[in-house]
Every structure is written in C-alpha cells, then in structure tokens.
Length: 149
Image (tube, rainbow, N blue to C red; front, side):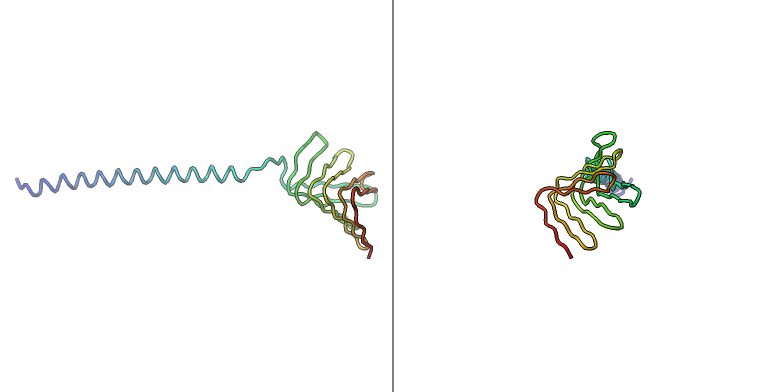
C-alpha cells in the first residue's frame, strides 16, 4: 500500500472536519448576533404611551375642534394625558402646546404648559389654558402675551 496516499487521506478527513466545525461555529455566532440585534431594536421602539398619535374632537353646535398629539396616556376612564406636539385645530383657530389633560366625557381640556393660540387676527402666548363649555370658552393662564393684527 502506498504510504503517501494513506497520509493524505487522513489529512483530508481532518481538514474537512475542521472546516465543518469552523462553519458551524460561524453560523451559530451570526445567529446569536442577529437575535441580540432584534431584541435591542424591539426594546428601543416601545414607549410608555398607551396611545400613539391619538385623535379626538370637541363638538358643539357651531364648530368642531380636532385634537391631535404624538402620544397619550389614560389617566382614568374619561381623562387622557396628551403629550408632545398637541394641537387643537378648528376653522377659526389653532392652539399648540406640549401637554394637555383632555376629558372625553365633558369635552374639556386643561394645560399648564406653554401654549400658542393663533387665529386670523390674534396670537396669544400663555403659560396654560382651559377649554370649557364644549369649546365655547377658552381661558388663558399665567404670563400671557397678546398680539393683535
């Protein structure tokens, strides 16, 4: 029997087994890294908000006020805390602020954060506001600047 062919056969078998083992380690390593990336992405996408991009409306006899925000949290069955880019918009005016407590049952809103009211002839910057009587009355609080056009 040829000794040269016998040695090569053993080397080839060990080399093939080494390649299979290295390939298996590589595949498991990549799979573990992919699983870690997926878990990190899922954790980053969740926030503590109950509602993302909530939309509500205050309706009365003469107008409709649409309310939008980036996120919201339920405080009770009827009260919702709206946060980030909160906007009240009707045909006559708009109000922009960062945080509002909206009562869905009574259709009232209350804010203690900086607010910007805009209408055709008036701009008001205030430290907060209350909307009562289904949107017919708006009371501005704190330091307020009124600009008439």
